[in-house]
Amino acid sequence: MQFFRKMLRDSKGATAIEYGLIAALIAVAAIGAMTSLGTKLGSTFNNVKGNMR
Image (cartoon, rainbow, N blue to C red; front, side, top):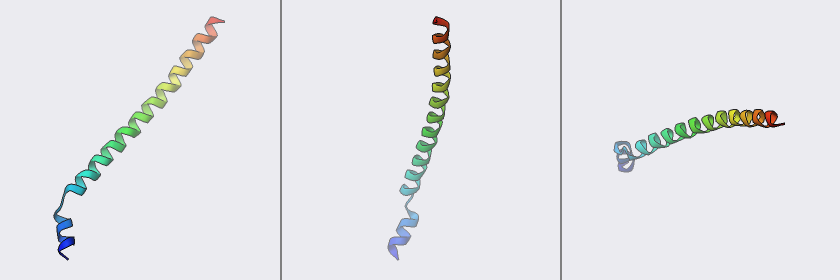
């Protein structure tokens, strides 16, 4: 029983979970930005290739 009381008072686990969620959110935003940028960059290179012919 003391173990559970100690776990309820300990906030280290909650902080670790919060940091994990923040890291996951940043990763999702970065992946979305890179995907969008990659698509636009590919389109730009295709336009350049077409104009060089």
